[in-house]
Every structure is written in structure tokens, then in C-alpha cells.
Amino acid sequence: MDFNGYLESRLEDIKRKGLYRKRFIVPENLIDFSSNDYLGLKDCEETKKVLCENIEKLSLGSGASQLVSGYKSIQKELEDFLSEFKESEDCIVLGSGYLANTGLIQALTEEGDIVFSDQFNHASIIDGIRLSRAEKVIYRHNDMNDLEDKLKKSSGRGKRFIVTDGVFSMEGDTVNFPDLKFLADRYGAVVILDDAHSTGILGNGKGTIFHYGMKPDENIIQMGTLSKAVGSYGAFVCGSRTVIDFLINRMRTVIFSTALSPIQNFISLNNLKIMVSQPFRREYILKQSEYLAENLKKLGYNIEYRGTPILSLMIGKEDKAVRLRDLLVEKGIFIQAIRPPTVPEGSSRLRITISYRHSKEDIDYLIDTLKELRDKL
Ligand SMILES: *Cc1c(COP(=O)(O)O)cnc(C)c1O
Image (cartoon, rainbow, N blue to C red; front, side, top):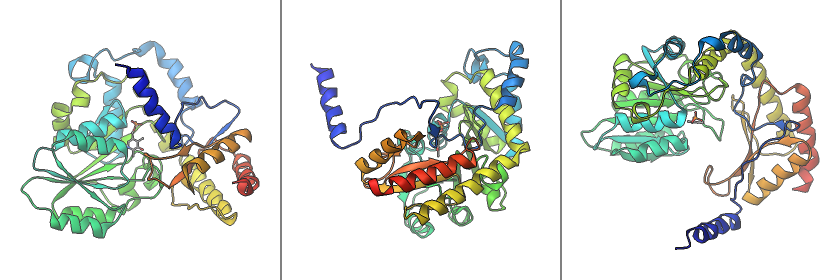
């Protein structure tokens, strides 16, 4: 069997559709407008310094899964910090957001349950539902009427879950959480809230629930990643003591995966403390995001500020988005083109993210460059 020949023909298909991807090491001299390092913490000098001072005390690896012997005091400290920060009873830290969502949904659901999921939820949520035996019901993006219709129509004796991103990773908009939670309570559903992009940004950095002046309760599970605004790596799930206890016993991505390195957890904890004590980082990026969107809109671009540092410059055609990306690279700017299957066909875009690393001059340079390139498209 010519297996490699077969894969090559599949790759040819992908290329023909304009969907071929390559990894790209963004050169140091390009201004990176594509990273999720919103608060500029991935290169935090303060944390680097404290890490050097403590490196002797830290193991390089955890050595085992959490339930064997990989659970260390630095992880417990990180979990305690996150529990308090998210105002929840308990917390578990694990490998990544992808592992959190896939493990969480699979662990909590069983045959006969129904998971209601926003159309634009992150791929890790979709994969989590696929791994579970629960029935999946997709509702239109952030459409609470559609969600209610679907809750009403569904029957069965199983448990119900509503799972949603807090801030949607590609659109940069925020879930209508008050209405969603109202429906969840009315129809007896548990809410799984993915605060990957909300943590550090919304609600004074505490996340989506706090953005709306609401409080967590035992029927809300908050997850988030430490790899975006926190600038580290790993993820967390916050919830009631019972939920976390159950996850420890049932979540396969915790049980069968090695615990994070103590060094990584140390970095997360330090960056979190800096994130909380330096609100000016968040304030700066939100102001700059609004400024950028307003100026690009004036130039005739299809872009909207939605209260987050994620700005989708809508282009449409796959090849056009790729061309704009390449033209920007020539000008010293890197913005990745986002294409299907990450976004629906014909809605290819340049996903611009603003970071605390960007100076006002960087942002003005982006505006000037896009002004210049507008007519070349
Ligand atoms: C990035 C992301 C994840 C995955 O987190 P990782 O730590 O990168 O694996 C999960 N959910 C959402 C909404 C995300 O944007």
C-alpha cells in the first residue's frame, strides 16, 4: 500500500482549497499581532527573576500523574490561588485547556445526558462531546431564543449541560451569560463555562461571571487556560468541592497524564499574581483595541471592537486572507489568516490580537500599513 502517496494526494486536495498550513517561526523582527499573550506576561521579567532565585528548589518534571506521585505543593498553592480568585470552593490544575475540556465533558456526562453547545465553541469542547456518550445539541451562536427552544424540545431523564465559551476565540464577543444562566436554572442544566480568553480580561480579570456582576454557584463549572493572558501553560477547572473530587476520580486526562512540571506551575502562579496586581496591563490593551478597531473601520475595513483584545478583520475568501497576511509580513507585521475548519467557509479573516507588548507606535504602524494595503486587495 502506497500510504505516503495517499497522504500526498490528500495534501494536494488541501492545497487546492487554499487551506494548506505550515508552521512558521515568527522572526523576532516582525511585530506579532497573533499571539494570545494579551497581557505581555509570557516574557515577564519579574517572573523570570523570581524563577531564577527559586530554581534550586524546583524539580524539572513532576515525574508521575497527579494520582500517583506527581502532585506537588506548588500545584496545591496554584490551585488555592485560583479557587480564591474564581470564588469557587475548589480547583484542579492540569495539562492544557484541550485536556481540560475533553476530560471534563467526558467525565461528567453519561448515556442519556444532553449537552447543549454553542455553534462557535472551541474545538476542544466539540471533541469533549464527541468522546462522551451524551447527546449533542448545537444552538445558534449566542442565541438564547434558539437555546431555549432546544431546551424546551428536548426530553429525557438524563442530566443537561450547557457549555459555552466566555469570550469566543475567533469572534472576540462575549456570551450573554445572565440569560444563559437564567435558562440553565429554569431548565435544570449545569453550566460549563470556558474562560480561556476571559481570564485576565473580563470582570477585572476574574472572568465572565464577574463581568456581569454575578457569582459562581454549585451548578457552574469554570474552566480556563493558563496559556493565554496568564502567559504560561496548563489549565484549571474550578467548581464545588464535590465536582472537583469527582473529576479527580473520573477525568481520564488527569488520571492518565503526567502532572505539569513544578516549574511551569511556579511560572503560572507568579504570572497570576502579577496579573492581579497590575490592572493597567488589561486597561491598556482594551483601550488600544478599541482605538485600532475604530481607525480600521474608518478605513472601510469590516471589524468590530467587542470589549476584548480579539479583533476579527473579516476578509471572506480564503486566498484573499492569505494574500493580506503575506503582504503584511513584507511590511514587518505578522497576523495569521484564520481559515476553515477553524471558522466557517467564506468567513476567513485576519485575527488581530492586541498585547501589552504593543506600543502605541506599533498600533499606528499597523493602521498606516493597512491603509496602504487596502487598495492592493
Ligand atoms: C485555547 C483554547 C482552549 C485550549 O487551551 P490550551 O491550553 O491551549 O490547550 C480551550 N478553549 C478555548 C475557548 C480556547 O480558546
